[in-house]
Amino acid sequence: MEVTTLSFENIHNHGELFANMFRARHRAFIDKNKWDLPQANGMEFDQYDTPASRWVAVHEGGQVLAGIRLTPTTHRCGIYSYMIRDAQLGLLDTIPSNLLYTPAPVAAHVWESSRVFVSEAVPASMRLRVQLQLRQEMVNSARMLGASMVLGLIPDATRRIGRRVGLECEPAGPILNFDGLDCVCVTISMATKLH
Image (cartoon, rainbow, N blue to C red):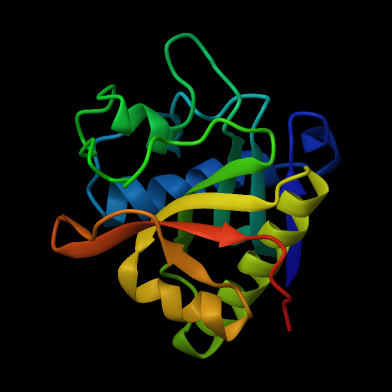
């Protein structure tokens, strides 16, 4: 099993991995979750997949097992900045604007984590290992990008996994229900010691 952080600057070094990440997202979010998202050629993408973002992929033999997108909170592309802030500003009709207790941060040291998934193809016996690899690489990448904090919208139940690897996912907003799944915005300090 390998873990790679992809960017527009290094995708040429990784063959089909970048495209396979978007194909895996299509399977996770469109096929499985039935979300109405932009898609083309079997790949899911949105307005936040820009050269400013990074994509963390856990993969094996060309198959993407899990992924996360990291986006700087300072980036803008047209009217969009990052998903949580845009939802708070009322630009996204699928996410309520009351997802944070305070105004969404715009700071070089804060990055957003989004489009987090673990493939259904990952057997139960490997899921925790894959999730741990994914979160470890997210932290490593965020730190290398200068982040001291990551902001994300996650299923409330997954906060336990963060604690298992030394990440404290502090609620930054109320618990919201999305299609029967309780989710919450959290902040994750990159200063936390991982084990």
